[in-house]
Image 1 (cartoon, helix red, strand yellow):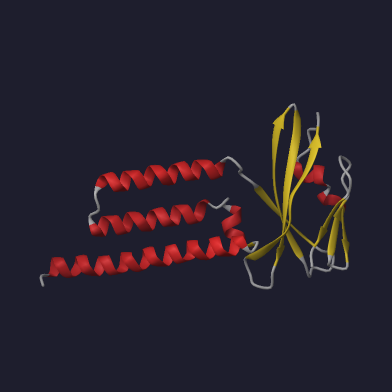
Image 2 (cartoon, helix red, strand yellow):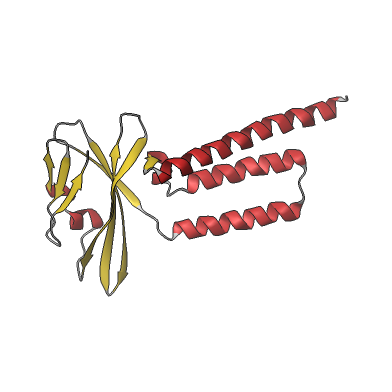
Length: 183
């Protein structure tokens, strides 16, 4: 074999391993989400990180394999359409901790305004594994009209009441108290 062919096969092996590793990571993220577990760094990027990692790994593999440009363009357009679709529900995230410091909750929030403002919240409990969170309450919403405060103030994050690190109650001036069971 010539040196050029050896380098091409070496690049193919490295890019194939990288693509497989990224696809395994994607599969792990999907399986975990079915069980309400998430990596906090994936949530904070609104699931864009796995799509972009997959796209980069695919490009490296396509370059090493000299894959047809039409296929590369098709994959790129599909990936950008998917990224645009997941960008529609762009959440922000905020972490709060219990008074004892033993429990941390990640709050995902966003709002939509059309006359009234609907504030949407998801709650995630940090696990003992760093960077791993479990969804404990989903799709809580509060509706307001003519309010200029931010989503966290509407929820009542500053007036959170912790009960034995097993429950947190948010006292909101805009809705009934929101209770989140953590255990």
